[in-house]
Image 1 (cartoon, helix red, strand yellow):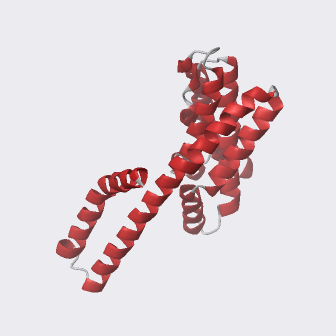
Image 2: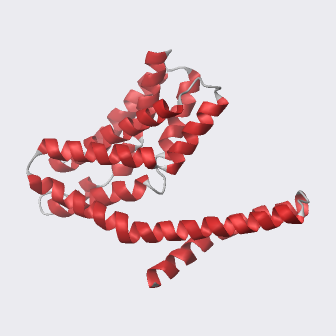
Image 3: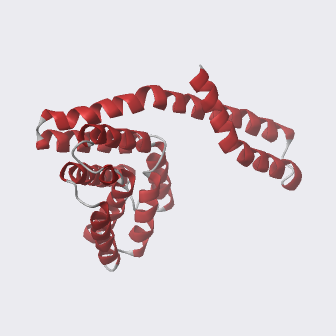
Length: 230
């Protein structure tokens, strides 16, 4: 219960100022009816309660499981096993990410069907999964994060000359939504688990950068979708 209280305090501290500003604007700037103001207060309280319970679940459920899976994979001694598990978990978590679903729905709505919601989520998930495999292999073989980031963004810059403008804009938005409350805890916990097993054989500074590498995947994926589908 102590952890839950801490999560509630964290959520209130993070979202309270935003809610207060919006509430003041509704009352003094927009002059919203009392019913709308009360509805906003109730829904804001529900959002804060949901975030607090989600963080509580992440700390007690997702993070320990992610660390356990991450630490178990290298001990299996199978490179294909590590690649397969990292890709599947990363893909499924990305598809389940609320931010990704919201973006895909909005893009499909605004583009009037030009972008298919499910297709966009699939491409984003594959992009994250692929680069999570790259991140895991980087940790296993001790490759420099700087080199992989340079190569990744060099590919992004090269593809930008061939990708249609609408796909180019969406690709960077797709990268941003993958760093949401569902994806980040799992990615980080997997990285921590792998790092814990390899800490005696690898420099710990080489075990970071999972989020940075994973965020490149959706950019390249959406860009390639634009190149091949237009």
